[in-house]
Amino acid sequence: MADVYEKGLNYALYLLSLQMRTISELRNKMTEKQYEPEIIDRVIAYLKEVNFVDDVYYAQQYIRSRRVKYGDYRLKMDLKRKGISQSDVNLAYLGLEEEEDTLEPIEAVKVVLDKKIATLQIDWERLKSDYKYKYGLYQKLASFLANRGFPGGVIKEAIGERLSEQFIDEE
Image 1 (cartoon, one colour):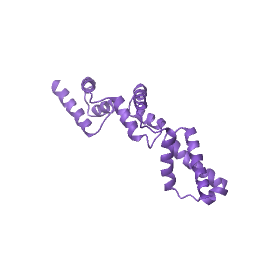
Image 2 (cartoon, helix red, strand yellow):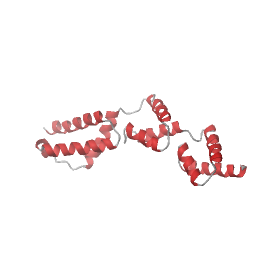
Image 3 (tube, helix red, strand yellow):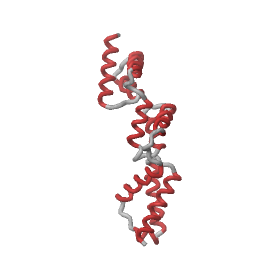
Image 4 (cartoon, helix red, strand yellow):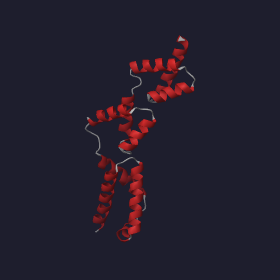
């Protein structure tokens, strides 16, 4: 039994040496390798004790690294899919609120929106007179940002502001 525990621990440490993992991901990987649930529980308990796995810390790092590209809704859903509990996600967000260098949602949306607009070929002259074209572009940009998990009010404000800036700059 001790030999199986050692192998399980070594396997878990190997997995963690490749990349950070959530407890759920680690549990799934070890289950795939057909380790007994008792062994998996002992290994995870030990790894938690020595701070090698921590779902709150994982969530904070995940959010911090992706916050510029994605909205909070998308990040929360991704973390939930990774097996992190809602309470751990909330703790991660509370820990990140204390940091001073976080972008406001509107600023993050503007960064993503500007990058997206740069990749599109937009006929700015047609946009001034063709309502269907303008509506289609607005829908495309709004859909893109919504898929990134940004809130609707922020999306509307950012797109409206960005498109009105373009008209003001050209006059």
